[in-house]
Image 1 (tube, rainbow, N blue to C red):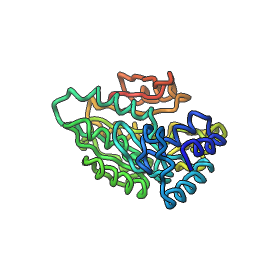
Image 2 (cartoon, one colour; image 1 turned 90 degrees about the vertical axis):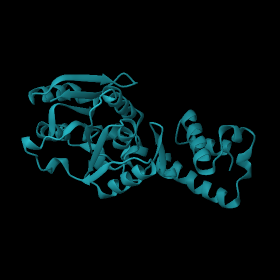
Image 3 (cartoon, rainbow, N blue to C red; image 1 turned 180 degrees about the horizontal axis):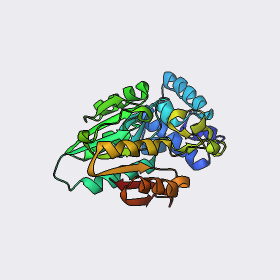
Image 4 (tube, helix red, strand yellow; image 1 turned 60 degrees about the vertical axis):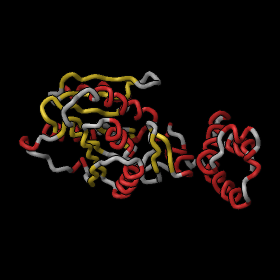
Amino acid sequence: MTYHELWHRLAHVYDEEEAKAIARMVYEVRYGLSWSDLCIGKDTQLSADDQAELEEITERLEHHEPVQYVLGQTDFCGYTFLVNEHVLIPRPETAELCQWIITSVISQQSPLNILDIGTGSGNISITLSANIPNAHVSAWDISLEALEVARENAQRNHVHVSFEQVDILNAQRPSLNAQRYDLIVSNPPYIADKERNAMEPNVLDYEPHTALFVPDDNPLRFYRAIAEYGQMALRPGGWLYFEINPLYANELRELLSMMSCHDIETKYDQFGKPRFIRAQR
C-alpha cells in the first residue's frame, strides 16, 4: 500500500487534509519515512511484513481509532509520549496551559513545589518538570494504568516526577500546617454528559470516559474538590491553574471567588475560547 492509497482509504473516514496528515504520520512514525522519502517513492519499498502491518493499521484507522493509539505515541511540547486506551491523548490546548505556567514562573529563583492532579499520560507534569529547573513536581491520578504510562513517559523523557495514586474526590485534606505546594494544576474531566452526542467517534469510542465526562448536574465537581484541597495544601499566595470547559467559565470564576481566591484570570486558547483559568490563594 502506498501513501496515496492509504490516505484515499482514510478519506472515507476523515476529511482529505486530515487523512493526508494521518497517513504521513503513519509512514514517519512506524516506518521512518519522511515526506521527502514519500515524494521519491520509498513507500513502495516496504517489506511484505510491513505491508501486512500497514493493512492492520489502516483497518484500525478506518474504524475511527485515533492514530495516536494505533501508533502508541504522540508528540507534545517537543516531547514524545506513550499513549494507550488508559490515558487521554494530549491536546494542543493543554500545551498552551503548560506554556502559560512556564512563562509565569520561570524567572522565580526559589524552589517550587508543583502538583498536577489527574495527570493521565503525565504530559503536564513531565513538561513542567523538564522546563522549570527549580521545580519539584508531584502528580496524582486515580488510575493505576494511567500512572504506569506516566511513569514510563517520565523515564523516557529523562525527568523526575513523584507519581501517586490519589482520588481527588476523596483525598485526605491536609492541615493548615501542612501547606506545601506553590502551584496546583489540573486538566480534569469537564465534558458534560449532555455534550456526548456532539463528539466525534474517535474520541467517544476510544478515549477513557472517566477522564472526559462529568454529570450534567455537577459539571464543576472536580474543580470544587481541587480548589477545596488547594485552600489547605497551597501556601499563601500559591496558584491554581485549570484547563476548563468554556461553557462553565463564568460559573468557575464565581466558584473560585466564593472560595476567597483572588487575581482570577481567564485565558483564551488559540481558537478564541475561554480555555484556562488561574487563581491565587
